[in-house]
Length: 545
Ligand SMILES: [Zn+2]
Image 1 (cartoon, rainbow, N blue to C red):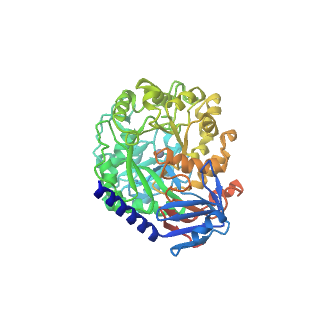
Image 2: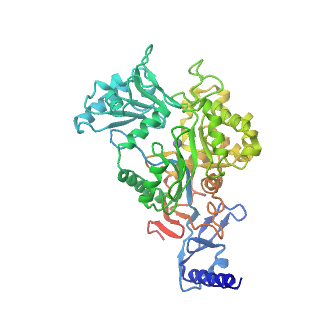
Image 3: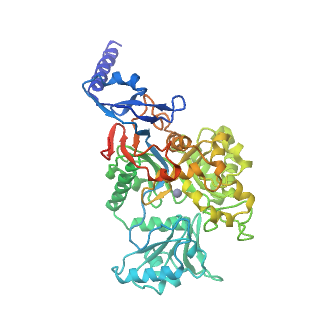
């Protein structure tokens, strides 16, 4: 016992000593939104080492400047918020010659004829064998002539892949199929399908859901790790300029092991929660390595349906603009096995994230949870529904009781004109709840759904605060920022470490270029971070302070 207490005393001295030498930064004279419901606003904040040690008024915090190691920063009335936490991103994408950008949201994008012309021009100045990529929308997905045969005539020497900009649907040419070893009569895999030439089993080159995710895996298998490391570094460098200090990444196309190997080489300036994206139940999501500093690995993501854009979101009823058609259920009878496997893991490691857009998909998840223990088994496991656009009023109460967390991407609200065609008016009038989720006590997090590049969170915050589809569902700016910080932290079981500015929490914060709480809404998307701090380290400094 004496030896033990001596050891404790030495440890206490050591930790006291290291704190005395830890750097201290004191911010004064700011407009600080803490996202802490007990004390939402402050003017001053002090950081020591990687931790916040005080938040309050200038008078309360100023005494902490009496320290030889203290650096004092006058915020000059600038706005500080907790570091943003993007709850839903996809950093890595295939590399090739991208011939257009997905800048036509929510428009239809190029027609098939325009795609052919662009591919022809691209093929003429791109070395043979290089992948040619384009983003497409309904201009192609609504055209039954858009098959590999329409693409084969453009170039015989380049594999081609057209990506639905919303991330659901790929169109390959024949060389692309051959390059990825997809046979003419390839059987459908778990969770997805190949479209067929009508009346035959011949694959048309149009690939959906888990068949598509296999294509993405094969395309990323062509790339060296260094290329993926570069993508993470570029993404993170842009993200910290927006004030992100955390991202929750689903690397569609990478195994758990490869993702962590890449992240450990990337040495990123922000925190990454890496979420496993298995291509089937047999694929391992075990964590064998730590992915490096600032990286954690937990959770499993499954896709339960597509999107309303290509009419593969899975509905209880029929699409208004395609009678008799309900969409597609990716997981089908595999769901019980997925749920049972998750229940065998601790809540954070085994947290399930389900992409579910249609009401049939959302209710399918809720039915599955109820059939595997219901509230007792699931209330504390924070099962996430990503998007949840058709979480409809009859399901609110059981979603709350089953511990569901909704992760929404407000940019999708801009698709309302298309959704008004896809759904009957009663469904349309109830879709994409936001403010109602808070009223119902259903936890809400926000994410950009950024694919391949960092998206602007302030565009999301703007859209969440006007909700163009249903203005009565709009959030206040405070609520939107809270969903993007405290809400996103809750969605990854991290609310005790981050998401609010309070003593004892990690010093993850951003100082903004303008006051988003008073700016006219239409100016909010032009906001940037002028100072981003992760764990006390300045990771982005625009030189404005
Ligand atoms: Zn996504």
